[in-house]
Length: 566
Image (cartoon, rainbow, N blue to C red):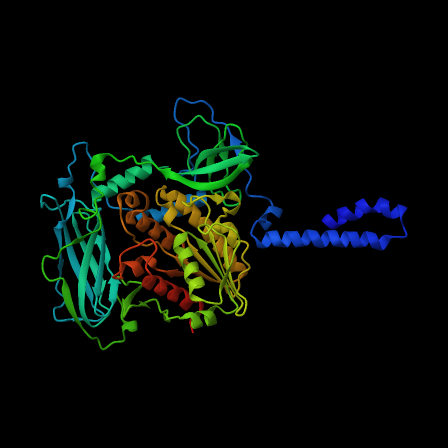
């Protein structure tokens, strides 16, 4: 287009000076070369988005809220499409939680679940005799309140694992809520020798009641800010998936391709198009003092439950190959000698720097999501001496980030998902939705796509997360349709350390619910899961949002074993 325009503008001059056509062509060539050079430099620095040459999805619209006696809202939690509603209805069974006790004004902490007065008991082996590899161990858990009285309802959040510190072995347990204050935990016995049972109360059922109420009444307790600027004038306003209780005008940044909603209050002086950055704003604490007592470390939050008898079992060998054994509630894998052993048929290899380079030679690895998969990008760049980061002059939190190994022709990139994202200030030009990014991936046998999207959706109604995953699922389906050989790997959620703030924003209960949604939505697709939930739960190291190096290495080993199974 630019070449045609320049040529037409030169025609009158060429008619008057017909003896110098080559000088005109030289001018045009130099201009075109200069333009293309500048364009390529800017593109390489990540400041140009090729989607700008397609119908844009970044159109902002200004909406005026009409005066009303009732608080107005831009929320679209209940405005799912008919297709999304159908999927959401099918997911309800997967995420249904037992009814939890209501909180009354005169409720006392002494009436709530007390881990120290609760207990677990290892039940005898079915049929009697000694425990053997391949058996299923069952543990009965009885929850009591601070008075020592048995609880009559369910809904407590419990985690369980079986482990052996000598062998660096561990496996996650499967907990069943009987909805009457009693629970069962089931463990697959996967190694010979001693195994110790551990049961932890993450939250009492009364805390779950509080978390449910928070999401219903204060879905915007985490809020975000955007800076608007034009010349010397700048303004900052609040943004979110949902804006409520105001008569103020707002800017609608709903993505036109995916329908993902995002709103900001309109600045008083500037237009909606003047928005230049996105940042986490803050957190609104709305709990009463009695409710805060439900989230006390060392008292009723992530506290171990004692055994009423022995907490160990001794396991004898089984003549059958462990890979041929069947379990009623099989885990995805287990640790033995510190290495993750998958039970889905995947042979997990132990990769070092050299074997990682061999595995990824000639491949492009695209990582999309939150900081839990950015940690994988950082692991790869730190592990491979020839994989050099290219400075794109972008945020180290949100990216985009790029690393290249020219010798082995390896490229690894990271880009965060679109809002909501709780990062420091990020240019709005770099806020891209994963579904849109996947549509620009060429794909093929030398392409690896990693997706990890969960942590920043905890405070919002689950419908927001369902919409996001459905958009990503459709984009993954399109990618696998046009490039079936593409390897797509999804990282699940994981348990983490708990404080009052973490409980109200990123509780393990929130993460567990969203983890169930993720597994159901991608069930049946040609994608592989790295089960971060079980890999952290089964390990002896403390639960962390960003796991320690031993667990991180095992996760990347699983990823690379999907990419290079031989």
